[in-house]
Length: 236
Length: 105
Image (cartoon, rainbow over all chains, first blue to last red):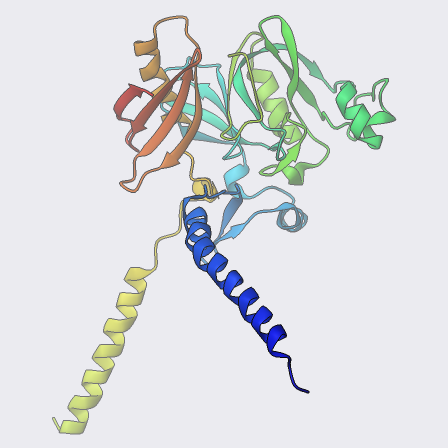
């Protein structure tokens, strides 16, 4: 089949047009790629002593670890650590990115607890205080949670306290001034989630740890919440 | 000692030196309390708060100072971003807890 010369010319013109555009656009595209901000997604990792490597710690890995060991990885278990701060003993500091809650002690130390924090888009930061506390609290999901989550909607009138209650054994209610922030530090019915970004913004500890913290904390205690990439701020 | 024996001895010595080098290159595992980390490489909370304390001295009493971000620097120090009543500050702190610099942004 012979190609007509007019068609060939048209093809050639089209090809040349495309080539010119590519030649102009390629440096721009390359520059855009180089200058575009690198989006770093946060990922928790734990050290695997057997393979001597750092491995990603996600929901699946957390469930497997907890099923095998009946507790969280050692880094997320309650322990005394060195903590250099001018904040007085009794202050609570939450490091949401590293998944730790520190309860400041005298002598440059703190009790460190492992925590679960808000999932992507639900993280928050600020300076608040413990307004009140409760044992085996009733869980009443906030209106926005009822609106988006069918599991929360069926408990809109309040779920009684108990082992299946999402707040677990204890709750510390966080206030900014005299206003309830709706955020709590609480226990959990899902202890394998410690070390993960899972909640709607509340800070969760396993029930043994939250019971220990509750026994030490004073009403009015200052709570500093550190979270890089927070979606909102409270108390500042 | 024959040439063959010297060659065998030399190869054995090289093997031992190689193994020792590999062992020296393998980093020591972290202590158990440090066996969790975030890929974000944020500064430890106490170092962030040391920066906050340093900013409070500049910003004045009564101003709430909150670290809002941090990152590891190539020299091993941490850069910490802070908010002091709406005013932004930048702080550099090292792992010994020494605040190297504080400046308004």
